[in-house]
Image 1 (cartoon, rainbow, N blue to C red):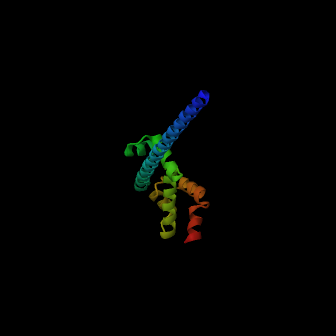
Image 2 (image 1 turned 90 degrees about the vertical axis):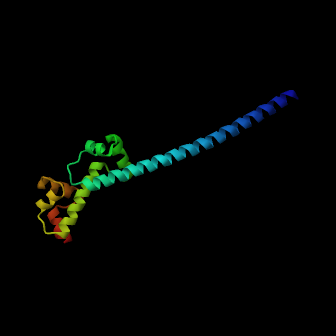
Image 3 (image 1 turned 180 degrees about the horizontal axis):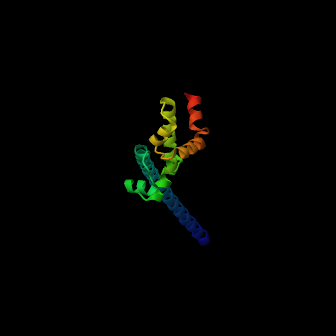
Amino acid sequence: MEQLTDREDTGSVTESVNHILQAFLIELHALLKDSKTKEVKQDYSLGLRIKEFLDEHYLEDLKLPAIAKALNVNPYYLSHTFKKISGYSPMQYITLRRIGEAQNLLITTSQTITDIALQCGYNNSNYFQVVFNNIVGMPPGKYRKTWK
């Protein structure tokens, strides 16, 4: 009979330990979830700061270290966070932003392609046309004729 009682005591202790462990795991999960939510909010906030900075300065000759310095963030962390939030690296975003501006100018103005290239941050019109063609799928002149 005494052996049965020992087993019952062991079972009771095991059950108590399981309950404590389960409560601990639930609490740990809640803490991790909160920290993840906080981390996501911080990443999103930084992503917005980066986007705002890039939108204000996309016509300038920007390099990742200069962007990171201006925002007081590690360049790797900046790039990683922005890509996680937007799906693009900061430099890809700048390129897409410039080409988007060029598309708008091609349709709404009669400026030359060279003038538009310069206005959109490209010092070399030929390079601008190559980048434009790669992103849009047609050269700027054809784009203008198609959409104007």
